[in-house]
Amino acid sequence: MGHSQELSEFKRGTVIGYHLCNKSIHKISLVLNIPRSNVSAIISKWKQLGMTATQP
Image 1: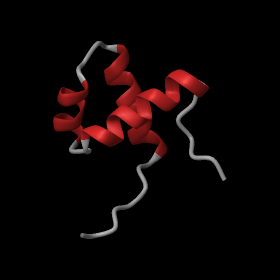
Image 2: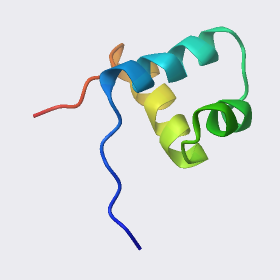
Image 3: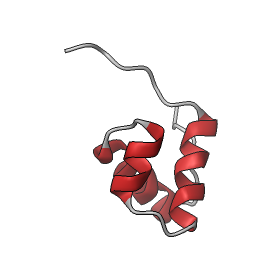
């Protein structure tokens, strides 16, 4: 398995934008070519912390 790159702040923001437009996790995953688990994790983190930036 290859090691993937961290998603950019823009791409994480795009995930949240799609989520706010009531798109499903599956649809967001397909459109942005990101695994569903990553999409779900981004949305969960945003709901809990109100941000998508990575922590140091």
